[in-house]
Amino acid sequence: MPEDPSAPRLRHKWRMPVEWLGIVPFLLFALLFLILPTMKIVVGAFQTPEGAFTLQNLADLNTDSIRSAYWTSIRLSLITALLGCAIGFAMAAAVVFGGLPKGIRSPLLTFSGVASNFAGVPLAFAFIATLGPVGLITVWLRTEFGINLRAMGFNLLSFNGLVITYLFFQIPLMILIIIPALDGLKREWREAAEVLGATGAQYWRMVALPILFPSLLGTFALLFANAFGAVATAFALTGPQLNIVPIKLFAQIRGDVLGNPNLGYALAFGMIVITALANFLYIWLRVRSERWLK
Amino acid sequence: MTRFFAWAAFLLGSLFFLLPLIGMTEFSLKARRGEYSFDAYMRVFEDQRFWDTFSYSLILAAATIVVGVFLVVPTAYWVRLKLPQARPVIEFITLLPLVIPAIVIVFGYIRLYNTSSFLPMTGSALGTDILLTMGYTTLALPYMYRSVDTGLRTIDVGTLTEAAQSLGAGWVTILARIILPNVMVAVLSGAFLTLAIVLGEFTMAALLNRPAFGPYMQLLGANRAYEPPALAVIAFAITWGCMGLMQLVTRLSKHERAKA
Image 1 (tube, chains in turn blue, purple):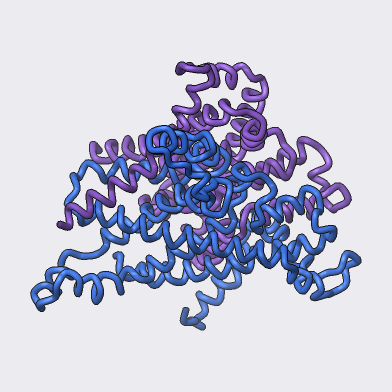
Image 2 (image 1 turned 45 degrees about the vertical axis):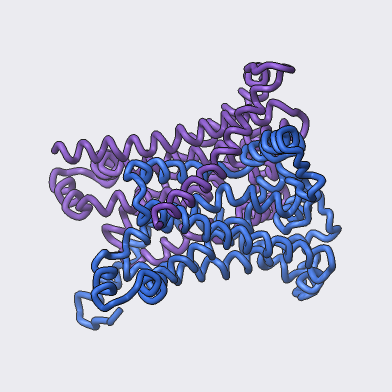
């Protein structure tokens, strides 16, 4: 913003503190219930129980159990974000470009709004009732076709089961975010490409996808963070034994299972670092992609 | 050809979403051997803890909505009217709850407001309830702020304020009788989303040890067979209801505006 050193502007600047008073309640709330608690975690990650500075907590994260928890969490988030993006994109593209009846669009958006919020404990129940040991599909496949999912190595209370369950809120989130982006693709761009002799595939590869790329990658980052921080679904599905970071942190907060409170801070700090990276990628790309959606 | 793939993508996707819903509904009706019945639902509704936890979460949701409205409406209004230079800061803060996982925020609460701290909120039930309400307000902040800010964009805040001031209105009157009614649709739509979030929330309530609906569902899930899918059906209906009401208020307001 260019500074204007003229007199009225200076007077305006001098009065500014009074106007800032209007957002003091909000800033106070943010400080007390968002920023200070987070700072407590970040600072605690670099402190010994006595309060001295240390890097030992972060170094102590480097154990087999914690490393594998992070790795499982990252893999789970990556895979569900990737599949969520791909399937959500396919469904959104089908509705926007596929020549499906117009009446499908609005129910799909409403349903996506519901499903993306239908996460947590009840979602786990729904999948246990469907794909669990005595769930609808499991029993149906066994009695009608003699297919035993369990014998084939499928177990809902495992990594793969968690992937399928997470997709139930990841796909709708993708649909909600990507449909406006697909609507933003102007018909003229396609026509211009066709006039210049582009095939459908060329149009997608050279025009549409580069324009959509920031939205796609940005949504991917959002889905990643969304899966990475999720506790309730996994906890209700598998209980405290599954080794992913949020569950580990949950157990640590409840009963100090790591035997060192400051290691808990370090565990949480690692979560913040990873989701922050993913989200800043999202916000940055979002700003870039909004230029095209006017 | 395109149309074939479009139908295939849409139908396969729909199947993935419908099967768990069918699965949970079917399972919830099987509590009686050999026939469908509503026994599981009856048992859920007869359970006093269901009503206790559900009304607890409902009260907390109401408190969260009130705190959220008091916090967000004046702030968003003030930023639009007098402090456009603060917008990036405020928007950044409202996005933070999407960046910092809820479990980390509540971990910070537990350590910051424990009984030996400067503000021992976790020391009493009421203090913990207030802390949980603030936590929920934080979780709902991104949605509430976005909704209200979009609502404010459609009205001319400056002109309305000047008109009210020249008629002698003070700040409270302006906010309560001019601005709030004008962004009511945005506030309501944020409120219904908040309701859906709070009723299903598990992590914060469980770690703060409060008897909310989310932890109750989890506890029941660990101990019973047929009640959990019944609860899932109920929770899905509630979520659907909240989203439906959200759409309804938006549609009604569009209708009104079109008539005017």
